[in-house]
Image 1 (spheres, rainbow, N blue to C red):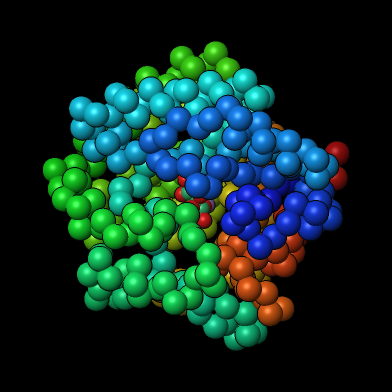
Image 2 (cartoon, rainbow, N blue to C red; image 1 turned 90 degrees about the horizontal axis):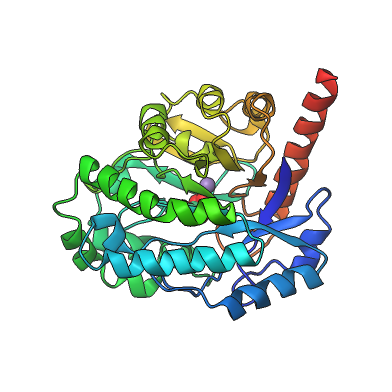
Length: 355
Ligand code: CS2
Ligand code: MN
């Protein structure tokens, strides 16, 4: 595996490349053109500039998170063709710059959903948290407003204010889209892009829906082993793969994470590893990466990745806000650096015990 950190670009991130370079074992970043709109074709010059900036700091780009998918593709409206063409252009330009992993998601309307961005934990750190009760009590249009006070001034992925202004229209767009339609639209999209992925050796890595169930009555399909294996079979190309995100699949306690990892051998192109602490099945908060701070056995998760011969990029996912840091919720430097060090430690121990 290749340990990485997510970096949003110098215009948006409070964390610098110079800081990332000093985290032991981190030699590359996962990044994006954060101001590119879903549906736009990325300019080759912009990709090149991003790459030069990262390389000038002594790091490499291990992959893109995310190239976002336009809603027309997800709902399957006739104008999707134009957006798929743009997506293909972006993939070609990334391929030409020697970038071979692209993370994306197929979640309708909202990206990940949390009901709190700064819940206090007993140790005084603050974390993202979710309760089903809070979601059930709120109108979707109020969702963004209810958490926007705690963003620390950052623009959060999938929650861009311009997008949130149109939540009602977005819901309208999805009103006839159920799980089956969403599967069919995903299949259509993948079949169209796979020849380009094959040509440039680009691994597509779909991020799971977070939480791994339907919210606000919207369809959600990338939620469990059955569905993800269906998706792998539906377009049976090694470049059609997944981002294994423990914190997203793990929201559903019925998902057996190590078992899911083993069943996806060869198709995991990117891993997000983080821990959650459950207070009840419908109330969870994000914990430190250390197993004993949360509800997951992180050793078993890393061992499963080791066992399937995982060689792709991996990153600590959301971290707690600690030591007075002010950053995008989930994306401060300190706790993610601790997470990277811990995951590296687990990996070293597993590796040496197998020799
Ligand atoms: C990320 C997602 O912060 C997060 O929860 O894991 O936002 C992820 O980047 C997207 O869903 C992938 O497209
Ligand atoms: Mn994730």
